[in-house]
Structure formats: C-alpha cells, structure tokens
Amino acid sequence: MTAAKPPAAWHDSDSAAEQDNVYRTFTEQSADGLLVIDHHGYIRYANPAAVALFSPTTGSLIDFHIGVPSVEHATEMQIPRPDGIRHIELMASEILWDKAKATLASLRDVTERNQIRQELTDALAQFRGVVEQSVAGIYIVQDGRLAYINPRFAEILGYASCEELVGREVLSIVAESDRDTAGKNIQRRISGEIDSLAYETRLLRKDGSIVEVGVHGSAAKLRGQPAIIGIMQDITGKRLAERNSREYLASIEASLMGTVGVAVSLSAMRDPYTAAHQRRVADIASAIGAEMGFDANRQKGLRVAGMLHDIGKMSVPAEILVKPGRLSALEYVLVQHHTIAGYDTLKGVKFPWPVAEIALQHHERMDGSGYPNKLKGEEILQEARIIAVADVVEAMSSHRPHRPSLGIDAALTEIEHGRGSLYDPAVTDACMRLFREKGYVIPE
Amino acid sequence: MVMENPDEKYHLRLYIAGMTPTARRALSNIESICTDHLQGRYDIEVIDLLEQPALAEGDQIIAVPTLVRRLPPPLRKIIGDLSQTEKVIVGLNLVPYKKDP
Image 1 (cartoon, rainbow over the protein chains, first blue to last red):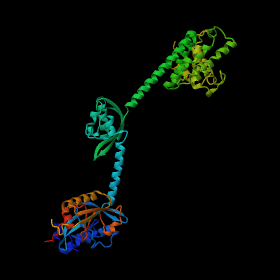
Image 2: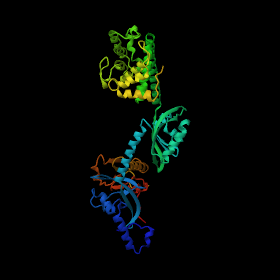
Image 3: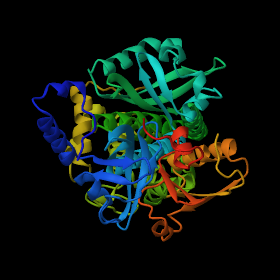
Image 4: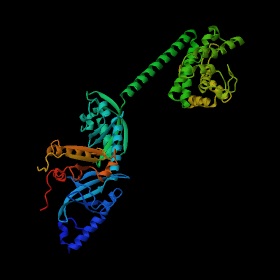
C-alpha cells in the first residue's frame, strides 16, 4: 500500500519505511472506515473498519465499483444492508495513489448518534407540543427578562404573539403594587435560596388592565446560567367566583338570621318571657359551645337553635304560659308538647344546623328521664345537650311568671347535681368553668 | 464543453433510500447540471431502495445516494450529494477526463 501524502510534521521521521508503518497502523486501527477510490470509482484500498461497514453486503471491497465521491463537506450517506440501513458521514479528499489522482474517503458510522439525535428531537417535539398547547401559561425568566413564553402566557396577558413579550423585563408586566414582592421572589430562586415557589400576584395586560394569576416557578439552568421555569394560571375568574360566593353566602346568612329575628319578635309579642328566655339561652349555649372548642359555625348554630328552641310554645295557650303558680297535669302535658310542636314548625326550614332536632330534644336527659322520646346519652344531639343545660340555668336564674328567680348559684348547683345523670358531664363542666372561673354573666 | 456525440441520450439513475436531505440535494444538483450541460438529452430515474430494495443488486449499489450513468455505456457511478459539479461532469464524462500531468 502507498499511503496518502503525510502531513508536514511527520516528515522528520527517520525513514520512509517508518512513516509508512505509522500510517499503516493509523489506517488499520482507525475506527472510521477509510477507502481509496480511483478516478473511475473503483475501490483500491479499504481499511478493516470500512470492510466491516460494507461486508454484510459485499465480499472483498478491493476493485469494487462504488463510484466517484462528489461531496464538498462531511455529507450524510446511507449504506443499505440486510440488517438495516447504516448512516455514515462521508468526507472526501484528493490524494495521489499509484501516481494517479484518487479520492481518500473517510466514512464515520453515525447510525447510533442519529438515532439518539432523532429520539431527542422527537422528545423535544413532544415536549414542545405539550408546552405550546398547554392550558397554563409557561415561562422562562433569565437575567430579569422573559426568555421564553408559550402562546397561552401571551394570551392571558392579551398579546397576539409571544414575540411581543419575549425579551421584556419581567417586572414590567407585574402590577406596580406587586412588583417588589415579585422581584424578591425571583431573586430568592435565582440566588439559590429556595428551589421553587408558588404564589399569587397581579400582572398587567397589554391594555393596562389587571389580571390575577397564580404562578409556580422553579430554579433551573438555561445555557448554564440561572433561570426560572414556571407555569402561570389566570385566577381572575376563580377569585371573582369566590368573592361572589362569599357575598352570596353572607346575604343568605343575613336573610336567615333576619327571618329568625322576625320569628322571635313575633313570639315576643305573644309571650315576652319566652322570647327573652330564648335570647339568653342562645347566649349561654353559644358561650358553652365556645368553651367546649366549637368552631364559629357550630357556635352560630347553637345561637340560632337557642333563639328558636321554644318556638313550639306558640302552640301552648298563652294563659298557661303566663299562669302564676303550679300547672295542672293536663297543662303540664300541653307545655311538654312544645318540643314536638317546635320540631314540626322548624323541620321544613333548611338550616345548616339541626335546629329542629335540637328543639325536639332539648328536654331529653342523659338517663332517659326526659321527654318527648326518652332518649339517652349519645342518642341526644350534643347541641341539644348544651341547650338543655343553658335552658335550665337560664330558667332557674330568671324570674318566671309562676315564681321569682332562684339565682344563678341555685341553677349551677342543680346542674352540678345532675352532672352525668341528667346533664352531659362535658357540657356541665364547661358551664361551671364559664360561670365560676371565667366570670360569665347572663346578659339582660 | 466537449461531447463526442452531441445526439447521444443520457439515461441516469439516482439511487436513494428515502428522500433524505442528502438525496434531495443530490437530485437538485444533478437536475441543475443536466439542464446546463445536456439540454433535454437526458432522463433521470430515481430509485428509492426503501421501496425497491432488490434493484440495488443490479447496479451493485452499496451506498446511497449513488448516481449511475446507465447510458451511454460504459456504466459510471458517482456517490454523494453531487455538490462538486466538476467531479460530476468529469465522472459522467460530460467532458473528457484529463490525464494526470
């Protein structure tokens, strides 16, 4: 074999034979295929790597008519083989071979590289598809500017194209009131203090209007430099719906409480004692509820139930209710019926609390000695057990048509005496703490 | 340009394996060269080995793109994207091959 013309640096080698040996070793051990092709397109030399590339298709490559290479730069070609197509990069340079012009063709197998590149391209295309079509805005911030945004991001801010926003300072699209916070939030992630952050902020749309958004961005690297990659969602509609919902609930609650107030006022016209009693029971019951750790909503339920628990007394003849002295057995049965009458009156009202059931059960006792259904212990609603205690405390400590006030001490003694048998121990204890330790006083 | 027989018709075959970027360049380059040098006295047949793999054997094609001059004889071959116009012209014998000095 005659080697291609060696580079100048090798001219200093001791002898032509040594140089020849060096080149032979290079070519024989090269991972790239090397072919010498004469000017008619016939292969005059093939190194082992080239033989390996073509061997599944051809026998010996020497004198094979492959064709004259015509490429200016490294050019991708294909070798169709029975085991599939191999992709090679072909580079060609002119040399002298046996004193005639020839081409040295170097062939680099790039099949695996192409495969990886294709997989990467496919994955990127899929990723880009997901990002571009995302219903959430997606953005990359670097050096304080928007380095990338997806179409949805532009759409949320009222821009027709992403190009209008890319390159803009990110803080210029943040509402002035939120700019400091947003700047600090960005800095915390860029500096590496935190990895990611989710927060709500207000951005400026193209027309200057405000859009409320939720953003979740994470620290990342883009071309080796710190960046933030995040998603952004328009929450203006959500916020508006929440506000409307809160206002609606507040108006419903106001209507409900107003209606309760009307009912109490009506009963007060007929029976002022009962109306005042209910108001005070409501206060005591909600205070006991608070003492027992009830949340604001359950306390409110106790207040409403307290204000209505004796509404059934509207069915009891007024002369019995205001009658001084002891009641006859029949009169007592009529008075007892007020729990059922109250339940019947309230059961059709859709309160967010079991107000009708509380009215029905507020004369039940823990040992089953109460009325109307002789329920015991846990069978009685906890709220009803609280109203029961508040009812007794208020009734005994107030002036009644048939007797003067027995005083708060007598009332508390009665409750304490009935702890566990008549009254729920936890409710009793809370009531005692309230009056004896916390200085609770029944309002006038 | 020197042509031995100005009426001679050229039948060229371009072997490819799918319309890859290299194949596209090769086709574009040979069409341009033929337009400039053969003025309608040629036809180019494109053989896609992905569709007709058996045809590779007849012309002994081991790498694609390969351009084969089937007519006039003798058969000549050029491989690559045919971007070196001079090589293509010489390879197809559109001008006589100059002996080395």
